[in-house]
Every structure is written in structure tokens, then in C-alpha cells.
Image 1 (spheres, chains in turn brown, purple, yellow):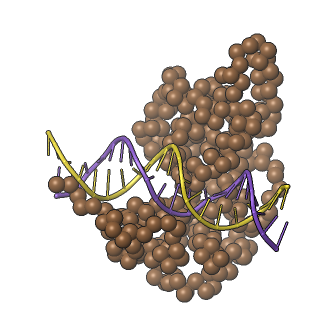
Image 2: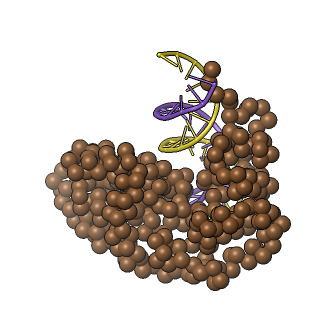
Length: 281
DNA sequence: AATGTAGACAACCGCCTCTAA
DNA sequence: CTTAGAGGCGGTTGTCTACAT
């Protein structure tokens, strides 16, 4: 009838991945590429489900992943995109190079959501909370007084508040927004062109108002804003010291030429470096 | 120093859509 | 055309770590 099962559930390992498993998976993907996940566990010598391998690779091992907290610019973009797209994390992640849907989802739930609530903004609808809860004239007055304050903070008020303040689903009701959302949902290539161009100013703006002190070369990688604005230099980053003894996990077998020609070097090294540090810890 | 609590994030679960057989 | 698995996605949980008491 249908296809063969991706994995016989028998003997399939669960739980955290070991360094050894990671090694096998990286080795396999970088040698053979990612084509057929159901075959990966068997061919790579892993007792894992293909699904689990895919997840591990896309969320953690991919060399082009950025590590560390989202920058304020990225955070702003996430908020902006969430206002348009809702919880479609994969769509949102597609607009943030080097970030995964899982990472963004986690960041949203642990950071941004709270931040928005603290500011009196509903993280689901992106509307001011008071608007829904209170209908008395006095509350509305309070709301009006609050909003400019939020604006002065420089975040969260840019696009969703300027264009309109409706929920993601409501966004689709107005003509222009509806068209945009349709395009976003139906055509990724258009999305790339439109939204990146669309948000370029937002990103730059966010960078301008981001005046928080930054520490060079930290693991949090807060300076590593995409678009080449600030990228930690290879030489300066002592996170790469471990690379000197990378041979012991088969660097030559990883097809790094392929890998590093295609992606940002520093990000890749940070990714695998932090992974290794985690494994050694 | 020991214990409790909160935060962060990796990983799993279950559902949906697409597509091979 | 039907069926069932693959792949992808979003929601949720589990575990580890840092911090507070």
C-alpha cells in the first residue's frame, strides 16, 4: 500500500542526544546531504527515529545556525512578523537566517510574551490588553496615556500599531493587509523579497535604538546581527580554540569545504563549537 | 551548604498535508 | 482512487542550570 515505515519503533532511542550520536549524524549529513530522513538513522548507525534525526539536525546541529539569544533587532522582527503571521513559527523563522522555528518559539514563550504582557500588550492579538478588558471611558483614557510611552521605548509600536492594531487573523480582513498576508502564506519567495525589504528599515531602526552595552566575543553572540552589520571576527573569537583539536571527531570527513563555502563561517564555528563545549561539559 | 524556585531550551508528541505505492 | 508513511509544524513537556532563600 503506502510507504514503508520510517522506523520500526522497536529499539529506537529517545531523550537527549549524546556527543557520539551528534558526531554520527553530522558526519552523515555533511557527507551525504539531507535527502531521506527515514534512511538516515540506519545509514548513520543511529538508533533513532528519522524524525528525531531531522529535528536534531535542523534545530541544533546545522552549521549555519546562530547560537545565543536573539538580538533586539531580531526580536523586533519576530514581534512584527508574529503580528502578521501569528504562531506560524516556521514562516517567521524563515525570515531570520540562522534561527530555527523551535528557537524562536522558545524565545517567544520565555521572553517576548512576558515582555509584551508587561507592557500591557496582548501577545496573541498584539492589541493593548486594557482595550479588551476595560470598556469604561476612564480605562480608555488610561490606555491612551499608556500608548505613547510604549512608543518612546522604541519597540513594539512600529508596524502593527501604525498600520492597524488588529489580531493576526483580523489583519487579513483589511484589503492591503489581506493581500500581503495572502502572499506571505502562499509564496515564500515573494515573502523573502517583500518582507525583508519591508523590514529592512525596521531592523536598522532597531539597531539604532539598541544602545544597550555589548560585550565583544561573548557566547550570547548579541552582536551577531545578520545582514553583515556586525559580525564577530574569526580571529578575535577565542571560542574557536577548540577547533585546533577538532580532528578527533573527524573534521576531515565532514566535508567542511562544502559546508563553509555555503555558509557564514563564524556562525558555523560557533554552532559546532558550542555544541562541542556542551558535550565536553 | 542545602534546598527550593524560576528560567531556558532541547526534545517529544500529535496532528496535518503531501505524495508514493 | 485509496491508503498509509514521510515530512513538517506547532504545542507541550522534561531536564538542566542559575539564582535566591
